[in-house]
Length: 125
Image (cartoon, rainbow, N blue to C red; front, side, top):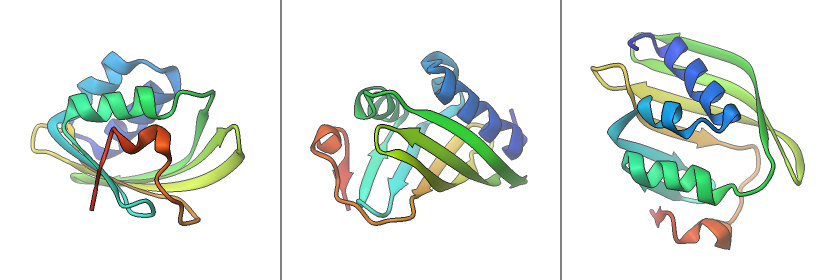
């Protein structure tokens, strides 16, 4: 997949469906995830898959409000619903030359501390 918009749409659809095989297939082997509010970072496809499966082990849902993409870059505005209610999120994506997602930077409206439930899954920066 080389279209950034389509790659990000497929990413969110696979996440919402908890289709971790499809989700993983969209990621570059050396994907880098960064969450600036908690200064959390995850490197590599296997680690990022584990981060998503284990780090969010509660009922949550994603509604995509908008995706804007051009070339190898895209941004998405989502609404995440979980045990604490609903909140908007803004996520930026960079694609590798082969069309897989290579970098993800996730922004949430309020700063927060890294939850203990995810601390073992990330490195701090």
